[in-house]
Amino acid sequence: MPPPSNHPDQPPASPGAGATVDQWLAYLEAIHPTEIDLGLDRVLVVLRRLFRRKPQARIITVAGTNGKGSAVATVEALLRVAGRRTGAYTSPHLQRYNERVRLNGEDISDDALVKAFEAVEAARGNVSLTYFEFGTLAAFVAFADAGLEDWVLEVGLGGRLDAVNVLDADFAILTSVDIDHVAFLGDNREVIGFEKAGVLRPGIPAVYADSEPPRSVLQQSSAQKVRMALFGQDYQLKREPATASGFASVVLNYQNQPIRLPAGPLPVKSVAAAVIAVRQLEPDLSVAVIEQVLSGISVPGRFERLGSSPDIFLDVGHNPHAAGWLAGQLENLKSPGRRVHAVYGALADKDVEGVGKAMAGVVDAWYLAGLKVPRGLAAHQLQARLADAGIDHAPAFESVAEALGSALSAAALNDLVVVFGSFYTVAEGREILLAQDSEGR
Image 1 (tube, rainbow, N blue to C red):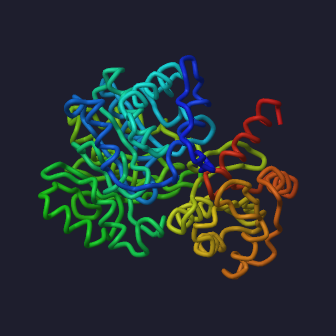
Image 2 (image 1 turned 180 degrees about the vertical axis):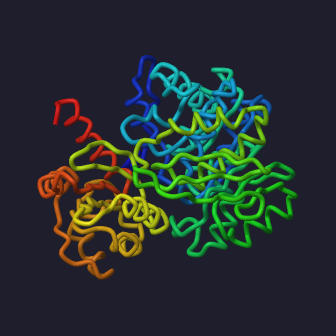
């Protein structure tokens, strides 16, 4: 996930032949005056230079406030087992930019990524693109070069004006609509829903994964005659008793056919929506195969387990809706005498107070980490904002490393440690934990 740069008055020189991925990424950070600049006009100009017509691929677009990465991973895995050549585009990344572009289930190579960057640079001329816009077009180039049949695209922010939306979707998944990115999308679900539903196209099939879709989503779906499957109306989810892992299994009933969804770490509503999408796209894929594939899907940074004794989890939940889901997952694993130690770091534009309230009932001990990145909250600022939410006795640490170290020292072997919040928080914690694991912690 790129930090916004201090942009020079004169645009930087384009990387030359033999430039590395890191050199290209530094260039992408510097060529546009702002990190986020929503709108499709500039991207469309360059897209038309790269592609004379719509790419010969099925476009599956995934939008929503939370759960997009899980939906993308599920659709990707199921389409691949159906024999389709599949690409997936997600953002942001945790450790390496290459994670954002997957070709047939594998992160893109440096060589293929640089080749795609070079193609976009040659096509854009004097058109200024943001880091995300440039990277999105590069993913399209890489998918086309690889001859992929299905492109599964995660919207970066919103939907209507997001760079991903320059391609017309053949199928759309809306995972959820809740409050986030208020400065860009608005401060209520109806306005945000209008932006998310901007990925819909006339007559296409779609699925809305959550309950109670905003009226704005339903209105756009109806106006465009979108065949949208709705939770509770076109399909049902039935929760079964909890397993030994602490999670309750869920049965999806769709078209009078039950499909058992795995107990475990991914948001079940997003997984269900992805299954429905694939049932429509690949109707011959058997239920038995679907269930087998689902049992092995995981997403880095989404309630990812990276340690035991104590159990350590990572989750990129950074808004109240996602924090509420995370709290439910932790509650499933709690038992008498088992404490939850939470390492939390956040960006300044997030609803820290709402996140704190969502997590307060399940967290026994807080460890607040300062983030030394653009828009990152210092630990004492985070501490003050959580105090406004009624959370006291939350010690502040200069970094994720210090906060995590303190949490691990304080946790008993039977306790739970969760590192959550900003992608920056999770990325730093994940790097530390993976390094410790390789050293035999």
